[in-house]
Image 1 (cartoon, rainbow, N blue to C red):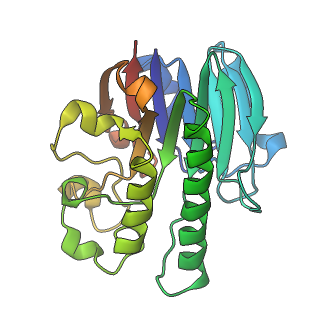
Image 2 (tube, one colour):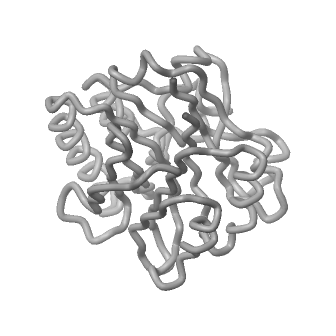
Length: 252
């Protein structure tokens, strides 16, 4: 079963890009972030016509997450703590609990945006811990807005004062991983450098000045079923692309 996560940076601006992607790389489940669309403008029918069930947690102009699935989507949940931003979507698909997240950026540090990010991650840790205790088969995919190590960044010196690489933020993600989750890309690819985001500014794409902040995490029950995982880097080279590119896994 092929699963991908893709921050599309506006679903309506990137519908053709996503269709081209799915034509080249057929997926069973797709997790989308930064859809930036109200519900009435979300292109449900476009993906339903391809045989997907579609569920979206929408917010005008900002945030927004959605899940496309070739299998029936059940028991949708739009939040895990009191939050007025559309950054979370959990559904049941087959016997999996599938979660799509768009973690806050948090910049600049020492502002309420940074405090919100730390609070969001702390509450997400608490929620993930509750799921682990229920022995759920969990897939968490999304834009985590966290650079875990130097292997996930072209040059960490450029990010020392950024909320994506701040030590407090990295510790929060490490706490979640330590509950029993595995970074699928690292399970397959070891310590190799690879990126999922290149800024539109300063020729980042052309220079390959990227960072890996888009992840698919697996609970231990699913880590053993992971066949392969990777990053579809070529999608970032499309015409009018998102600044992110899809990450993907294949489960037995």
